[in-house]
Amino acid sequence: MIYLTRRERFSAAHRMFRTDLTDEENLNIYGKCSNPMWHGHNYVLKVTVRGEPDPETGYFMNATRLKDIMLERVVEKLDHKNMNLETDFMAGKVATTENLAMAIWYELELPLAEEGATLHCVRVEETENNYVEYYG
Image 1: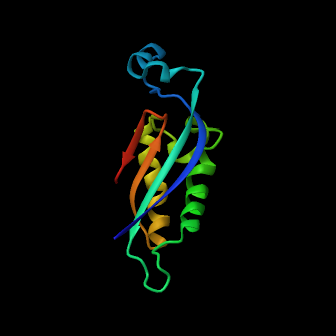
Image 2 (image 1 turned 90 degrees about the horizontal axis):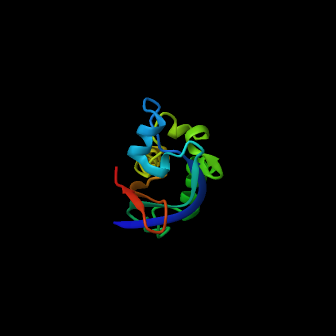
C-alpha cells in the first residue's frame, strides 16, 4: 500500500456560531471566533490517498490529477471566500475546523474513488498550532 499526500493552501473567512443562539451565547461557546464581523485564516489543506501502484506506470494516481480534484472541488470554493455564506458544502454547518475537514472529505471521496484512489486522511491546518485530521 502506497500513500500519496498533496498540500494546497487557501484563505477564507468564517464565523463559528449557531443561529438558534444569541451573540452572547455564541461568545460563551466559541469565544472570539464567534465575532459577528467574521474573521479569517490562511489554511493549509493536506489530502492523503492510498492505493496499490500499477506495475506499468509506477503509481496508483497521478499527483496532478489529485491536485486538479482538490482545486476544483475544494480550494476554488473556499479561497478568498466567506465559507459560511459562499461555500456550498458548508451550508448549514457551524464553520469549525472539524466540520470543515469532514465536509472536505465528502467533497473528495467519490471523485477520488472514480480515479482509483482511496481517501485516507483530510488534514486542515487552521493555524501553525491547530489542525484537525479526519479519517472518514
